[in-house]
Length: 350
Image 1 (spheres, rainbow, N blue to C red):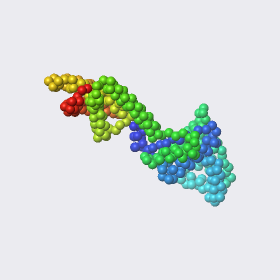
Image 2 (tube, rainbow, N blue to C red; image 1 turned 135 degrees about the vertical axis):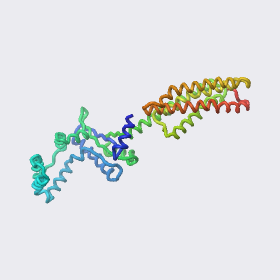
Image 3 (cartoon, rainbow, N blue to C red; image 1 turned 180 degrees about the vertical axis):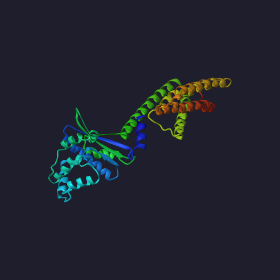
Image 4 (cartoon, rainbow, N blue to C red; image 1 turned 60 degrees about the horizontal axis):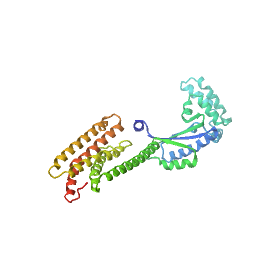
């Protein structure tokens, strides 16, 4: 649900749908601001190159000492500073504004020619005490562990080469921490894929071991697992045809089908092979009824999840319906023909 909500917000409410959050930690505010400035310069370079849409940090509203000195020098060298106080006051009056609320700012303009740098900590404190305190709260957090400066990067799909950016970031600020929806999704997908592979291998090995201990020949194992393989292939193909991709949850349906579906082929193979020509049809009908009832009860139980409002549960239901249904059809319609064909060659002992 969280990923779906995030996807809708990114699609409909944002010009730059992807976001990356960078955290720079430290106990000393001055040192923290310097390292945050290094990340900001890296982000600005990426923005100028068109690799991100934009970025934001506290450094965009709080200048460091070198930037303040450059601004002060520029103001001193500019001839427009003189008379700016009176010009602003006149412009406000002409526009119909009450001048008195602006007098502290108008008076401060008279000191532009003799301005001095302000410590970044003092500038942050002044900003935090102003109506713009939300800027500080969004980009700087202080807790028992110290300060945490946050830098936000905004980009579109396939615009930012994330591995390259992370490599450059680690060179600029090795201790910086990074997170984002894409990174979380990638890590989660890798974890699920790893769990699926190990579960599939473990389940498959156990099923094969049971088949080996039960059947007298390799053909018996083939008869049992043939419907599973056919049903799994048709299940995946049908899901692709209907636009239902493999996700974090319905991937595990493949593991369960290996265990459930192998029973169908096992029962049909035993009934068809153990009977003579006279009663093979009757035994197959009995086995077929059992397979149909077993498949229908499984579909009724797990398959009912297909109608759930929660998409993840619905994907499990549809995966089970398709997988179990196709496996049962292979066991009832295709497997008997294969068994009879192979049996004519004298290799029908299971």
